[in-house]
Length: 355
Image (cartoon, rainbow, N blue to C red):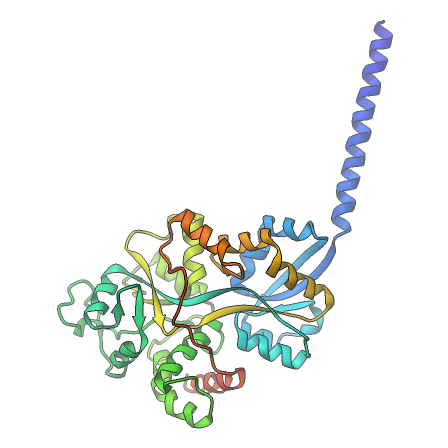
């Protein structure tokens, strides 16, 4: 009986070892069976694609998605796209340029993020007294341009005891030579200065003196949107009283719950604003599959919302902000389109020459 018991135990152990080996080989095979798809993306989406939950979601569809980050303007102009299956810049004009040059049949816009002003309650109060901020988190761009045209400093605002800084009232942006967010800021301010979308060389010449100084008078500007936003989070109101940001950056930090968004920090929505439409351009059939999944797959949509993106199906974003108590409008109404890629590039190049 003892020998039979020992034999039975040995058989059970052997079966267990064989099962473990087979399962390990099966898992290994399943991972190697994934089809690798390579893309170049706007850096704002790097954390999303690096997230293990996102990688697992793609793997369930047989894909291993690998990405390289680059600026949206770089993706449209200097990146060697032949190495990639898809390009995924953070703006519609850049995607339009890529679609034209690569003769892509279609594009996908699975998520977007409106441009916002990240600021602080005392700044909101000061600007409200000047008519720049209106109820409903509205930042009146026309009123703001009146202040900047006059070269108004913070310490010149009446009854200003909260922020009597001896520097001009300016929104901090990134370098227009490098960054998509700066290009979106140019789209907003040029629309207001022109009274509509800039669509001719005459209109460009008309608005450039006013909008160019919004960049030049800042002094040093950083190349990535993460830079000034991190200053806003860590250095506070003294260094960065107002910073242009993507709404997704702010929402993402609230959802993380990492305490970087503190009481007194808030968002304002430029009127008008533009949407940073994260637009995927398929360069090969496998890239087309990634675009389709990002647009239609419920799991990927919910995950994108947890990174602060407004999704093609608005339910996902609405659920996330409601769950985490983020104060953002359900719908951003006052949205305008940016100029064409060519017009935007000409204005950006004209401003860059003044640096």
